[in-house]
Length: 172
Image 1: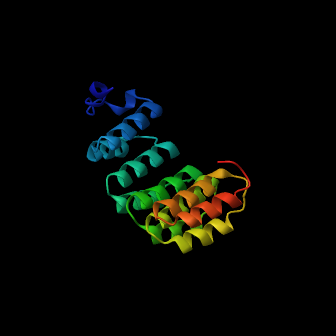
Image 2: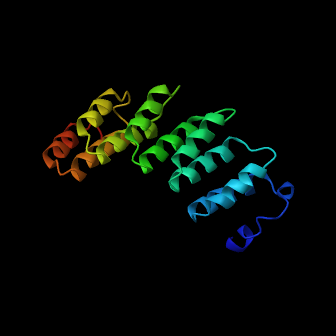
């Protein structure tokens, strides 16, 4: 695949959107963000996946402001778009920005909740994480239980982790 990605100068009209999205994702993973941006900017009809791929690429390479600008310019967003931006804030230690975006979201899933809980626990803000965990509506979903329990453990609050694990209504 690497040899195929080296041909950035090829006419983008001969590629389908799926192939170009894969190229953007791979280039972002390899830190070749300028090449990914060039492909994105030359695309005639980027779709939501294209935007999400570029947002993730920017965020994973420390360009969180570029990620947010692109997020704001998106013609339409889906849940993955919101989660990609929140994950970008998590990756770049921008907890307040992640929470701000979380609060603006039109809909959330368990992954969204666990992202923000993880933002707080990684930042040592366990009380805020627990407040958010307590608001999580689906108490039978293990995702947020795992995020909160592991957050306690990683912050060496083993008694809190054990106590929460004992309260968990499901086996995780």
